[in-house]
Length: 145
Image (cartoon, rainbow, N blue to C red; front, side):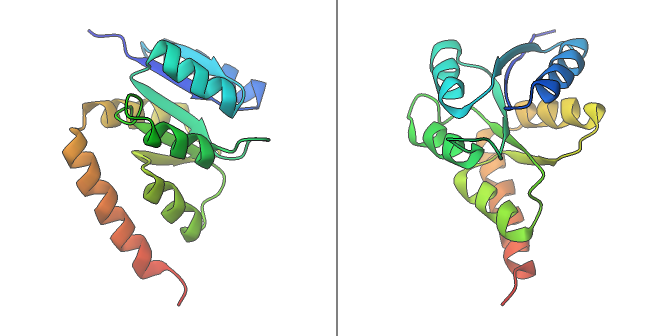
């Protein structure tokens, strides 16, 4: 079985620890970053298979990191799963619009988290785009007029 590398980005040490413990138990190799700038450095240096990215971080939030990843030709193909307490429709639309492969709401189930990452890694990039467009279309219907 292939061991996938996940870059977990969160400014909360307890969330990093929880993610590391659970994802390593599920067979992932876990890389960590505590802020946006170091996340971008790690992504460039380590080329993870997937990024798990917190939205609310100081200095450079997760959406800014996501945008930077997707603007970089070499990093753009790496799927990014947003980990967020921001679950308003406008927040979800923002994440999907920037190119998120999926979003997981905080607090999260560790079992759900590893399954979401496995699903994202198993999804063809063209299918990921179609799914993102479908989710965005549904969310646009839910938006306030």
